[in-house]
Image (cartoon, rainbow, N blue to C red; front, side, top):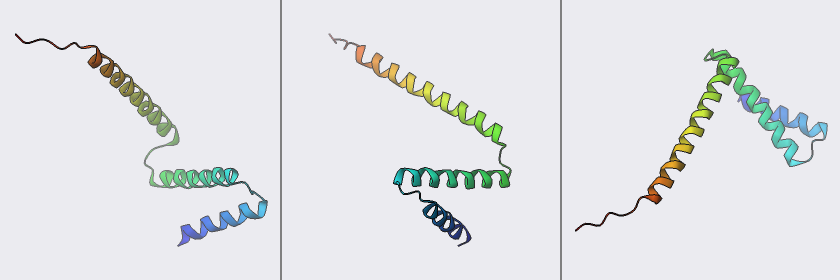
Length: 86
């Protein structure tokens, strides 16, 4: 209940400030939610912000490598010819 009241208050402030376009509203909403998420993570002392950024970059690079290897495998599979059996 406390969190929903916080979000409703933020919405009210945004409307009062005159943010009319939906794009502005969505970006502000995402910024608010990201800030709350970061605050929650810091309270839980899971990782520091620097560690989180490093880990997210590592995960992103690993995902890119996986995608590249999958593309290479698909190309190799297409190039393989069928072997005739006598």
